[in-house]
Amino acid sequence: MKFCSECGSANLTRRVPDGDHRVRFACPDCGTVHYKNPLVVCGVVPVYGDKVLLCKRGIEPRYGKWTLPAGFMELEESVEEGAQRELFEEAVAKVELGPLLTVLSVPRIGQVHMMYLGTLAEPKFETTPESTEVQLYDESEIPWDEIAFRTVATTLKHYFAQRKDGVFTVKCDTLL
Image (cartoon, rainbow, N blue to C red; front, side, top):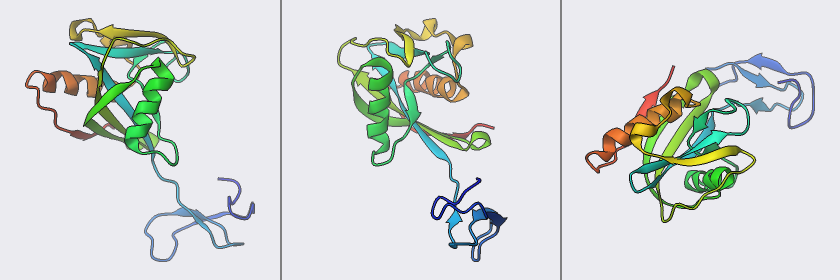
């Protein structure tokens, strides 16, 4: 951090504020303590029948790799709204949102990924600037070696394991 977002000062220091236990950026000019917290990534496992919708990334990071539709949650939206928005932005699709499937902490990059199950009413989707291909895959067809992120692979494996029983519980994990 180079400038205070409150007053614009370049006179920032790093210190442990009174009553806190972590080093934070602080502005001695206006007194603002700046907290940097993890970002929430929200997304969906879109399902049609026995198949899962995957998107081939048309943007970095991991351009050309397969992923579930997901992205950063925006201000003034719920996690569920963010998951639906990301699906529409990446695949021009809509689902009936089901249960939360995974909550995956990725402390190394300061992110928490929350993925929901979603049911497509019809196999209606298309490519977008964010996705060069959008395709339904049976479990046996998933291109596991071409999956973009560990969080996506973890979520897909959890979904397929739970699908056998038809009971979906939340998997909480930390990926180091």
